[in-house]
Image (cartoon, rainbow, N blue to C red; front, side):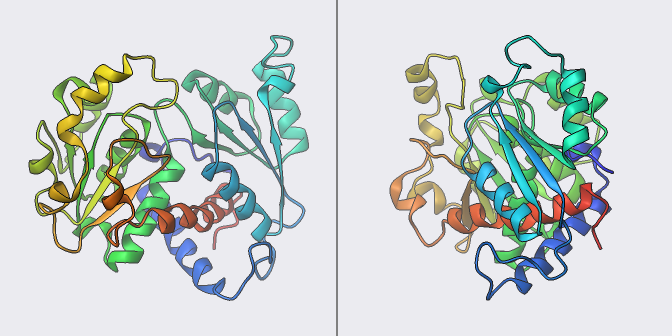
Length: 309
């Protein structure tokens, strides 16, 4: 049994095994319908329990399909329907029940502390479907997409992140250190990663640079990543924050400073941080990026349940 909570805590050899398995599984599914089961049905009889404390579209759909395609079943719980959120039951007791009924638990949460407490009491694998500090399933899937399109290991590529410092960027930073790829972060200095993340960056031999200039960040890169400037539950003056990111808007002019074959990725949902003519351009691979989460999450599930070949 293994958890999948933060990329920085997972050996790079295991992350690479997950990616290799996902690539193989995607190749084998070319002629399959969405709900057709993979050969061997490796999760037959297994139940993934999911709980969403924050809005979810891609994570919810992709884990549902991933489990179904492996021959297993999913059950989604709403926190407002449980005794847990109403203060009537502890995380310890809830974790015991989940462990007795399910084979794995995927949690999308508004609390890193809650994630750690579930980890303490669960006796089944815990998967982080998003937390305030991390989004590991998203970024591992993004690496899959980059390597699929570029037909090269990500370690040989140059990556740029344009936008706010958030949970997705935190996982991208961890991935940069694990996979040893160049990462330039373009953001206003006020919005650079927090002290804990900066200390983590400094403690590792890495190729991570933070610049207060979008053009410098994207110059000559192979991939540009972005996310919403105003994240879910971001309690700020939205007009003021958007104004501070005006020079970091992703448009055709900014894309022209990257390599000609540079691709654009966005974990979605989008907002005003990217112009329509970039988001819907040939360089944008956002739909392929979203769909690839199914394949990678299948391999993450198999990894957590010790069924990864």
